[in-house]
Image 1: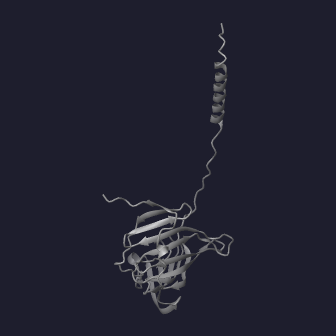
Image 2: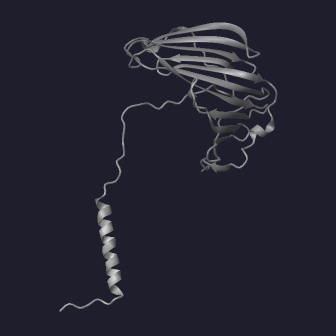
Image 3: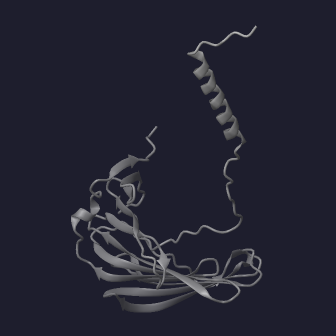
Length: 260
């Protein structure tokens, strides 16, 4: 004998049936596919080195141009940006980071980071513009350290790896600053770096002893193409102090490891 369900229970059972049916249908719907790709590279452009020197303030706009080969057709493609760099007389450094964009293209560069380093308290703030947050990490630069450009004498490389050629280019006034020029050409023999032909790297830079930086720097490598860094609007006056304060409205996330 069938027993009739109370009127209150019947709608509840019907709801459970609908839920069970919906769950079954959902479980039969395949999740969206994740598309994957093989190959490719991720490259980061290393800019000029700024040491924390005292009593050598400056401000400049650094123009960067990065040209790389397109492959077998012999063409090239070029990325560019401009960014401000400053250092005060205590050795604090302010740097903007702007995205590289195609040269003469329609895409406009945007600033994505501000970096502020202080050798006195060994702090470096990487301030991300889009989320208004500064990530605090240790800064290892020191005003007591002597920084010199890497210069190598001409001669054969160790283990018959190749040859190093050094050239002194003399003095030249670049952007209103006296500089000393150097050119170094490094040739690696076939097989040293997985290469089937001699691999030639050329580095030319014009160094300012007064400021401890390269005012003009060029690097041409088979791996990365041609990179040119040019200082513009160079001033040796003391920058305004507000540049070395954290951007207004930004929070700080301390990523330093506590001392044991």
